[in-house]
Length: 49
Image 1 (tube, rainbow, N blue to C red):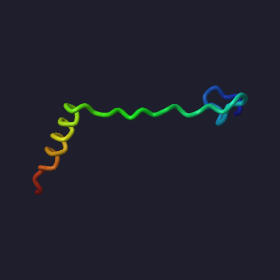
Image 2 (cartoon, one colour):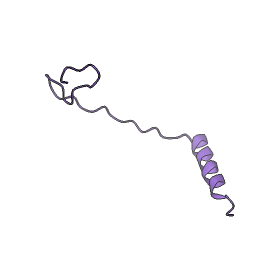
Image 3 (cartoon, one colour):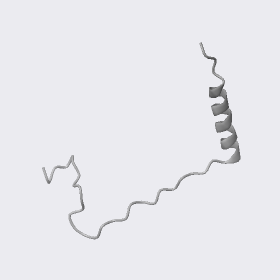
């Protein structure tokens, strides 16, 4: 199963270990933040049965 094209190897077979890619966390703009706040506020107003 080592040379299976479907399952990639767990480690690279040669060369230096690659660094994991840098994760960029997007920051919402003021309009997006306002929209998120409105959605959360609207979801909080649900009436209980």
